[in-house]
Length: 207
Image 1 (cartoon, rainbow, N blue to C red):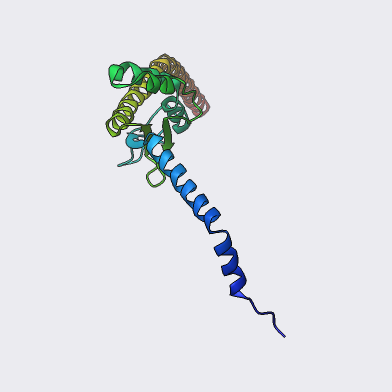
Image 2 (image 1 turned 30 degrees about the vertical axis):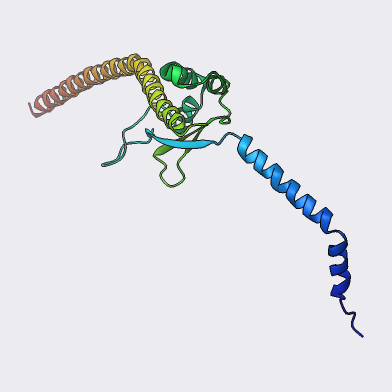
């Protein structure tokens, strides 16, 4: 014989404990209300940064970069960018917001996160959080601008360092080319002499 569930037992328990159940429910609602009123709302804004590729250029491909994507990402996540943003926004940020930004240490945590875009690998997404929507937008935009400047500066520095090496390579290649041309001329002269000598020998044999 199958066991039957007696709903009357459950109803009796609910009736007996109704004060406790109602009290717990009201307490949970009260706590949720207090938390919702006391918790500062958080707004997010996102700005996009174009990624320069360091791959070999193809027709229609993005511009070539001397910096790897990881190097560019590291620059965008650095505390140096946070300092530039704080300096740029100035009084638009509260002391607490400034301190939160300046504590950024490159671990991609805190009020600003920088990650490659999941759908378009040529973009970085800069996501900023703040207690005001306008502030989050200001931080994201300022961060993207400062990060772009930092990447351009690093790019120019790498280029300035690579130019002397490139010039040395060109000079060395020119010297090698000159040496090869001189050797070719000597070889041509030697061949001409050999041909002349052979012709003279034939003439002497004929006589």
